[in-house]
Image 1 (cartoon, chains in turn blue, green):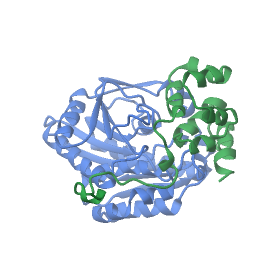
Image 2 (cartoon, rainbow over the protein chains, first blue to last red):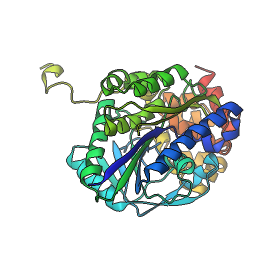
Image 3 (cartoon, rainbow over the protein chains, first blue to last red):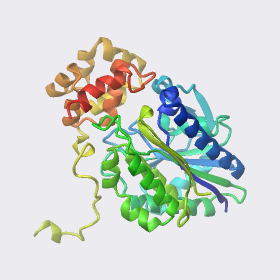
Image 4 (cartoon, rainbow over the protein chains, first blue to last red):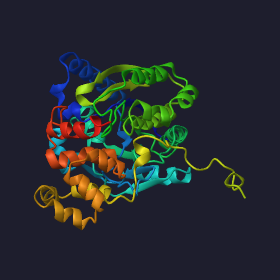
Length: 278
Length: 117
């Protein structure tokens, strides 16, 4: 009988921690300001647990074995995966897990028809390391990491992701203790194309269009227009990380997002957006 | 009986049929090699010092091996390598820290994947 006290979404691009200084000075300040604004909101919500949803970058799951969704049941999470420490410029950290909520998500999510795989542990790269470093650097708030497939076709479609968000909300409100205050943070995107011809490009127009749709607050319109094809055109393989944002949208429903900031950071090879629905 | 008459038609997923991700071949051995090497520092080292042996252990095809030797990242993608893993292959071969646009790993990727597009 807990409460969903916060719903947010942000980019997790590795450059933000890994080669921060390469961005233009004005962009650096504005990006940090947007994450600082998000951090303030998160802290004001006083969550007892942070559910984070982001794509797995083929770190835990190889191309021939990618589940739609996966959750780590670990009591303590460790990151980053060693080979990624230097790339991310993030030192090793530990953050408490929440096995009880993780199990509830697997159990009730499965009953709701979601293909969701429990894991004893998940390796973390930029997907969780970057947001944790920017938003909860003390690493004290228990978190439940949910990974999802946005990277290996056939991917869960926007409508499915939206529905999953609704199921997560239901689980949080019906299957947690009354004292639980749950924040939901989706990360990934915005436009980028890792390993492709547009590797060094950011589609600012697409990014701003996407954020504008979220700000407008019509889920029907978002689902109608933000298709996989649209995401791929903006940057193949990378932009589709915003499927995690659609999970967050599904948890919050018909509600306009507040855009806390957007910067097209070519130096980090990614459009950097931050939004809050609460 | 036409395929469209079997079943009710729209239960399969509709993902992109063209473009970068449509080429990925989940059976391509190069994808398994990159996936596993990252977890073991000794294997990462061997990729630089003992490349032929590692490629043989992963049973890469002749075409895959030729592309790896030539650092033909675009060729590997054409053979079914996942582009995200290819960006990591470049970092495994050329270094992973400070992966700015001017880094060697990014530059080698640029020459192969961006320049020849």
